[in-house]
Figure 1 (cartoon, rainbow, N blue to C red):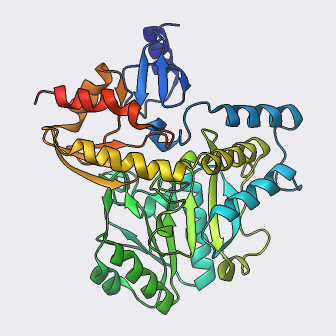
Figure 2 (cartoon, rainbow, N blue to C red; figure 1 turned 30 degrees about the vertical axis):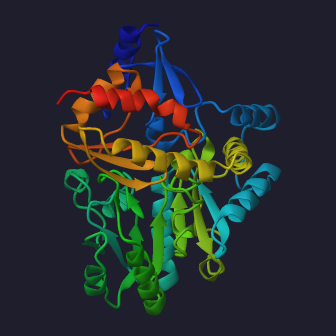
Figure 3 (cartoon, rainbow, N blue to C red; figure 1 turned 180 degrees about the vertical axis):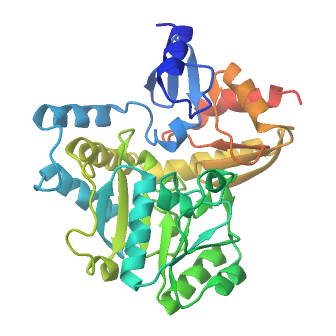
Length: 387
C-alpha cells in the first residue's frame, strides 16, 4: 500500500485521537526508520521514547520470537521462568532500596498503581502533584495531571489532589497537611518542555517526605533505563524515592509497565490488592530481559550521557537555537521560532523530532544507541533553517 492508501484506511477506521505526521513508517533499524517509499529518517523521537535501544533490535526480536515459540501467554496465576528472570533483572538495576516489582502494561497503569499503594500504605488520601505535570490519560493518572486541557476536558476528576509549582520547595511545604499520602512528580517534566529542577530540590523533597511519612513517587516513564545518563534519575544525585514507575522504552518496543517498590512498603501489600491480566506476560518479560542485557553489555547508560553532552555542545552556536535543557538523551531545544515549523522542516530533511506543550520547544527522545556520527545531518539541517 502507498501512503495515501494507508492514510485513508486509518482515517476511515481508526478513532481520530492523534494528529499524525505526514508519513507512514514501514520498518525500522537502529536509530533509523523507513517510510513506504523507502525514504530513510533519523529518528530522534523514538516513537515517543519507546525505541530505547533502537528499532527492532536483533536481541529483542530473537527473545520475543523464541519465547513465542514456547508460550505466548499465561497469567500471573502460575509461575513463569522468564518472568522470574525479568523480575530479578529489573530489581538488580534499580536503586538498592527497591526490592519488589509489580508488572503492568503502561505508564498510566503504573502511576495508578503507585498512587493506590501510597494511599493504602499511609491510610491517607491527598496526593500532591506538580503544575504542568503529565502522568497519563486514565482517570486516576489524569487526576494527577496538570498539563494543558486534559483535566478540563474530562471534569470532574478524582478529588484529593493538590498542585504545586515544580521545583518550588516552599509550595510543597505549604501544601502538606495531615491527610497527605504522597507526592508524585516527573523528575524531568518532558511534555512540559523538558523542565528540570536544581539538584537540591530533589534532596530536600526526599528529606521532607521521610520526616513526614509521605510516600515519594518518581514517575520515570520517560527517564528510566539509562536515558538520562543513569539507570534511574536519582542514581546520580543520591535520591531514592519510595516508589518508581516506569514504562515506554523498558520493553524494547513491547508494551510493559513496572512499579518498583521499597521493602517497607512492599511488605505491607497483600494478595488481591493489585492485579494486571497481561502484566509481566511471557513476551513482555522476554523483551524486558533482553533490553536490560543490551543496555548493560553495550554500556548504553554511559553512551546516553556522552552523546547527550555532544548534542548540548553542538547546538550552542546554531542561530535558531535559544537554549538547551535536559539530561542525557532527554533533551529540550528552546528555539527562536515555532517548534512545529522547525519539526516540519526537519521531516523534509529526513529527521523526526518531537514537540512539547511549549510552542517554541522541540524534544529529542532518541534511542540511547545513538552515535555522534548519526547527528551530522541534524546539526547541518538546523544550521540551514531560515527563520
